Structures are given as structure tokens and as C-alpha cells.
Length: 429
Image 1 (cartoon, rainbow, N blue to C red):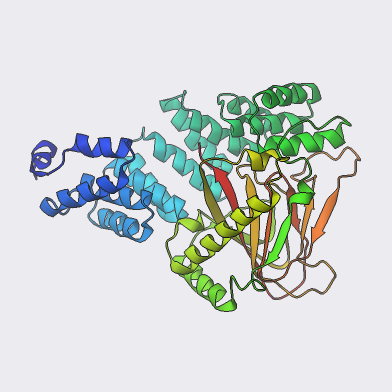
Image 2: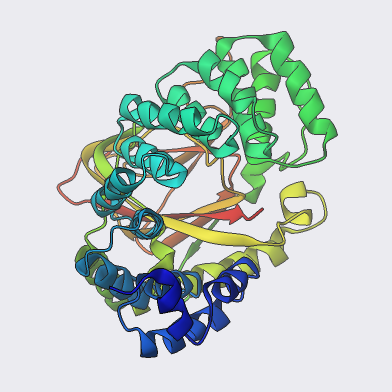
């Protein structure tokens, strides 16, 4: 077998040139360069890796999967390539495949930071945060300055209810979400003075965030204090429900096509502690380039644009400071007889929404409806009353709302499943 240097000499484009294309985010050029090199060396691991990564970043998920599958079938043992493959499978919701790739990467290189972190994320996705923490600790033993590892281990400690430990690790990051999650830990620990001090300092940064807004509004009731945080001060007025059946944007045939496509993908189930008698899909369903998925994605994006035009009157920060760059991140929630989803908000979102693909018939007035509130996530009540609002929903309804609002599913009794396509607009940094 020829060594790497002689192999590179046969390529049209050098490894350094390819890397520069990647760093410069010239993904289409990277794709073409990899294809040119592969005409000379069809099974070259590095060029196949570049091809797979470029396909993924260009949104051609089918081609990316074909290329990563080819790499694995060829017996590739390069840890960074296996790590990239694991990232791909994680992002597309195949957690078991992701775990296998990252485990193989660790065998080749025990110090692969990405795979150590991604294995932690895989275990956390499955509700195994104690196991996840062990991988994060191994990552920190390699590089104790890695900020993403500190955030990951903090998330797992928070999931386990160890709020002080979580707060300590969040403190390593200046990322707005990490600062807000640390703020939430102080709130749950009941440290009113420290919480208000941190909230005041975060407010001074003029960086609107849904979690800070949620905490500020909840604290205003819990502690009888003024809510000064700017995000969406009258969130109940920014809930919009529309029927996509009535507007003829969707029909039953599209939903049938979507279900057929979704079932074929065999996406892993994500452990969701707030979800009773149901499951949530892993990964971002909207990166899957299947026609019914992309049709629904376009419909949702068009409705979001309409929402922005309708509600942006200059009074709500989440609309006046709409993120310049963002992604639409979506997942499926299936709830069965007697199940429900407890009150929660979307910490990473900006604007959130739900499209109801299946909806059981009601035995009681509000069976299976959605309820919005200023309380949720097991925050302390302190014997106070928190306002709420129920929205009646039917199959084909689309509900949009600020990500700062708590929302929950009212339990229902039916042999028919309640199936929701949930999504967030997530800012890109």
C-alpha cells in the first residue's frame, strides 16, 4: 500500500488545498475537488471523507450517507473519519449507528475529543446521563479548557438534578445559553439574591434570550418583583393558531407520505423525562432531504415569515431582534393513550411551533389540547398563581409561539395516537 505522501502526489488537489476549502466554507468547491481526486484514487479515505462532509454541509443527506456507508464498508479505521461519520448519524437521528462509529474512533485514538463528547451526547440522548458524564470527564482529562465539554457535562448534571455542580460547569462559558442555564440552576437552588444579581448582569448585555425571559417572568410572580427582561413581555398575545387544511396548504395525502417516509428512516427514540407514555424522535428531521419532509419544511417557513410580518409591531424584542442566521430544527412527538407532555419551554429556540399530524377524538372538553403557561419545568410555585391559556387543536393545525412560553399537553384517553411535528427556530452563532 502506498504511503500517504505518494498517494497525495497522485491527486489533482493537495490535502492542504482541500482543508483550506473546508475552513473557508467553500463546500461546493470542496465537493468538486474531492470528486476529481477520487477519479484517480476511487477508494482514498481522506477524499471520500471530504466528499461525505461536503455533501452533508450542502444538504445532500442521501449522498452523504452513501459515502459514509462506503467508508465504513471499506474498513476505514481513521479516528477523525469515524468521528465525522458518527456526527452525521447523530444529526440524522440514528443514535446506535453514531455510538458504534464513535466507539471505533476512541479505539483508534482514545484522545479524540469530538468522539468522547459525542459518546456522552449519545448516552444523554438515551437518558443515561451518569454514563455520559464519564465520557465528558475523559474529555476534560485530555483538555480541561474545552468549553463545549464543560457545557455538555453541565447539561447532564442538570438533567440529574445536581444543580450546583451544573452551575459550576456552566460558569466556564460566556455563551448566552450557558449563562442562562447557570441562571436557571441558581433559581432552582433558591438563591434569590445571586439569581437576581446574575439576571441583572445578563440583562445589561442586551442579549435577548427565551430562557432568561422565562425565568424573569416566573420570578416576577414567585418573588413579587418587576419583570424587566426584554424578549416578549405579553407572550400569550403572540400565540397563533391556523388550520393548514382550511388554507389548503396540506392534505391527508401529504401527511400519509410524510409518515411513510418517517417510518422508513428508522430514527432513534430520544429519552424525554417530561414525556409520559410516548416518545420523541432524535436528530433534526428537517435535514433529511425527502420530498414530503422538505414540503412541510417550506410550508412551515412560509408561515413563520407571515407570522413575523403580522406580529412585528416594534414592541417585542424577539421579533425586532430576529436572528440574522438560524436553522429550523424539527422532531416528532408521539403520545399514546393516557400520555402527556409536562410543562416545558424551548431553551435553544426563538420561535417555536407544533403541527398536528394526528389528533385523537376528545372524550373530555380539552383532551389532548395544548396549554400555555408562565409556569413549568418543576419550578418552585411558592403558593402563587401563574396565568395559563388553553388552545384547542385539531388535526392539521399549526401553532406558533415565543420559545419563552411554557407549554404542555393535556392528558387524553384514546386508542389513537397524538402525533406532533414540533420545531424551533434556533439562532446560529
